[in-house]
Image (cartoon, rainbow, N blue to C red; front, side):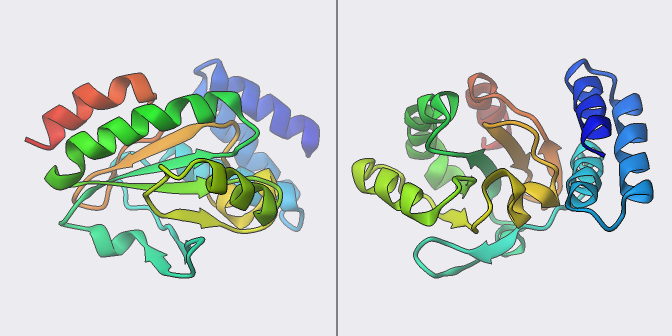
Length: 187
């Protein structure tokens, strides 16, 4: 299943999503009892998520319950999957802060989903970076955690933009695209 997952991911990154979906589906059916099957099933959900609602429920690092459904008809939600060991993720954080300042009052909600391997690593990073003011979700397991598997997150950073109607607008938006997309969505 590991080799098949690599094949599926390679097809996905090459833009051949139909082939990627085929491989993810085969992993899910042929190896249904393995942890890799959960990641493959999640990747299928993510690849087919545009125009559909997604679930994101959990506890924030401050112990509060987060449920993306609470923001339906209220806010655009940007889900930012990241880890403190990823330089590209850390490079995006100042831009996300700027976007939160610019669009927060107009209806943008950012939620971080941290995929560090340990809570201590996340806590140490957040103690240094006091500007992470949006909610952060965390569960042990890093790239093999429930959060990573639910949508088959293959790389970091990954960002998903969810519309006010609760449906995915973009499942792989880049930070450089956000300002123009948000200005159009949050008039």
